[in-house]
Each structure stands twice: as C-alpha cells, then as structure tokens.
Length: 299
Image (tube, rainbow, N blue to C red; front, side, top):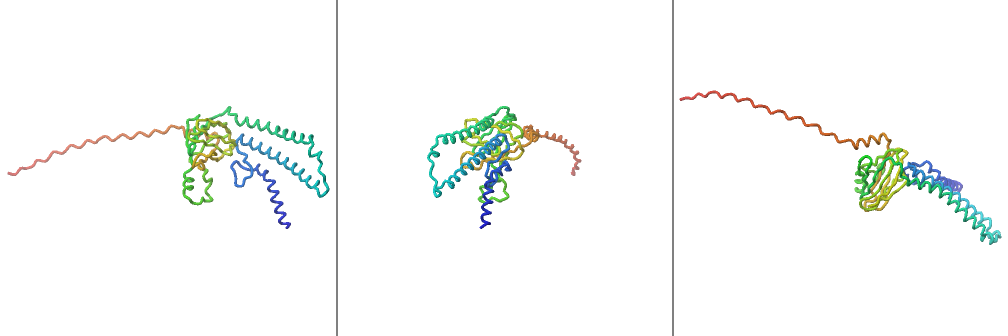
C-alpha cells in the first residue's frame, strides 16, 4: 500500500514539475513534449516568454482559488453546523474587489504582450528578402537580392517510402520532413519574407521560427525572422491544400554568414564555358603513284 502511495506521489510531483522541463527543451518538438518550444528567433523567444509568464500567473491563481475552495468546503461544512453567511455571498464590496483584480491582471499582461506583438510585425531594417510561393505541392524560394530561385519538395526517398506500403524503419530520420532543396539562410541577419501562393491557400510554418503565415493567391503577406543559432529547422504546410497537403515539408538550414556567402557565390557563379575543341588535323597529301613498269608485248 505504501509503495502504491509512493508511486502516486512521485507521478504527481513529476506532473507538477513538467512546466520546469520547458527551460531545457530544444527548438524541435519532441515526443510527449508538454510545453511549446522556445525557438531560435526573437519572435519565438518573445512568444515563449509571454506564454510562461501567463502560465505561472494562472498557476498562482489556480492554487489560491482551489485552496480557498477546499478550505471553505471542509471548514464550513454542514456536518459541523455551519450556516450560510448571506452577507458574505452577496457582498457588493467583495464582488467589486474580485472584479477589479482580474482587470488589473489583464492590464499587466496586456502591455508587454502588445509590445511583443508590435515588434513581431516590424519589418524595418531587413537585410535581405526572400519570396515564398506555395504550389500544389511544393515551395518556391526566390532570393530577391541575389536573383537565386529554387524549388523545394518532398525528398524522393520519403516519397518512395510513403508509396511503398511498407512499415517505416526506426532508423529513418525525419520521415516526411525531408526535402530535395533546403532553404539556406544566414544567422544573425534580419530576413524579410514575402509570402504568396500560385493556386490554393497554403501556410508556411516552421515552429522554431515562432510564427506561421498564410500563403494566399493574389495577396502578399509579410513576416520576418532573425535566426540566432545555426542548425536545421523543420516545418510543414499548415493549411489544408489538397490531397498531398501532408507531404509539403519545409526545411530551413541556418548557416554562418561566411558559409552563406559561399553558397550564394556557388549559385550565382557563371557556368564555365566549354573548352575549345582541338583543331582538326590537316589532311595528308596522298603520295604520288609510282610510274607503271613497261609491259613487254610478245608478238
């Protein structure tokens, strides 16, 4: 019996400590993850910090409310002869207090949330621009500052595996989240995105970047990011866009500015001209035929 109580107590403590584990989580989601990821951009970190502030505020409010509720239930129960105090339950002063306090709490949360929201939509001082176009069922990335254009679709090995009908091997990493061409971006650079679509509505979403933006035909939506940590960050189309909606992965590879410059140079370098063909050998003059020997005529 004691062993069972110990296990139950341990499970309860672990559940209560689950929010603390959020501080050690990486950018990519993990199996059985209970909290949102912190991300690797100012936008994602702002969203995470606001989320954690509200979470702990709700925890404190919940503890106070449930403590008061259980105290009242046991302290003033009918079996102990308690009588309802109508002056307390219908007190105008008390009702005014517990109306004003939530309003004050909402105002306290509103000011930092508004500041973070304004920063999220501030596209000024961007250092480069990438145009994202959604198609059924792939993405096109145009680096408007460099004239580079690439398309990105589900990697062939993932596509072959999903159509094979076989069980996915355990060592198959990032199944259905691999692409043939990654979006290469430099770190520590404010990047502006202009997002649209060619056919139907899509949505470009990478959780580690901290935002999601619809791609709508005929409309240009904007977003920005600044990745602080080099790495590979994955996402998907987040708007139902047809039969292969689930097979539109996104892979962003953040590299150093030096490696990004090398990548741009490799994409913009002019194609090498073919080497000139070797001149054809001069035609050889055929040797003069030797004079024919005289033929004796026998009479």
